[in-house]
Length: 274
View 1 (spheres, one colour):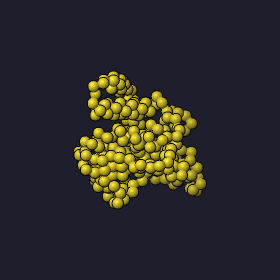
View 2 (tube, helix red, strand yellow; view 1 turned 180 degrees about the vertical axis):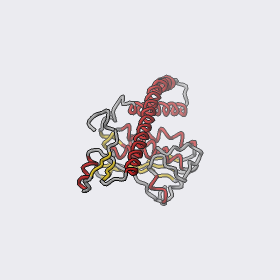
View 3 (tube, rainbow, N blue to C red; view 1 turned 120 degrees about the horizontal axis):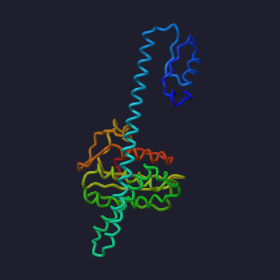
View 4 (cartoon, one colour; view 1 turned 45 degrees about the vertical axis):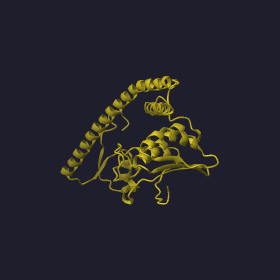
C-alpha cells in the first residue's frame, strides 16, 4: 500500500485469526476482504474474481471521469473568448444614445449574465479561488437578481418583487456564489409559477445570520417528493409552466453553496403566503 504502483491492488487477508480486533486491524491496513481458515477454495477464488472485477470497473470509471473532466476544462477555456466578446459588444452597444429603455435593460441583463458565466467558468478552471469572504449586503444582491429577471417575469406576466424591510442584512460570504444561489432560486420560482402569479423575495437579519425567503404562487411540491427536492438530477412531478427546460441541478447547487457558507435551505409550505 506504500508503493504507488501497487497501492490500488485489492488485498485479501486469509488467516486463522478470527477475533474482531484482528479483522478491524486488517481493514484499517487497507484490506478489502477477510477470510478465516479453514477456507473453501472455490469460495476464496470467487471472492478474488469479484474484487478483481470491481477494481476493473473502478479503473474504467476513473478513466471516464478523467476524460469528462478534460473535456469540461477545454470547453470552459474555449467559452471564455466568446463571453469576453459578448461583454465588449454590450459595452459598445450601450453607448448608443438612441437606445430605448427596454433595449438598454436587455443589454444590461446580457452583460450581467455574461459576467456571472465567466465567474463560474473561472472558478471551475481554478483561475481564481472561491473568492474572498467578506460582508455581503444581501438586499443589494436581491436588487441585482430582480433586475436580471425582470424581463423574464414580464414575459410570463408574473409579478416579481422584493418585500421592504428595515435594518441591515449583511452576511459573511462570497458575493459571487451567493448571487448564484439567489439567481437559481428566483429562476426556479419563475419557472414553476404560472402566468398571473407572483414571486417575492424577503431578507431579514436573524442574529448573526441572514434569512432569505423566496416565495411563489406555484403549485408546490408533493409531500412524498420533498426529501428529493434538493438532490441533484431529481425528477419531481411538478413541471415548468411554460415548457421551460429543467435539468434538476439548480436547487442542488443552491444547497451546496449555502452549506459551504455555513447555512442551509428548507422548503416551507405556507398556503397563506403570496
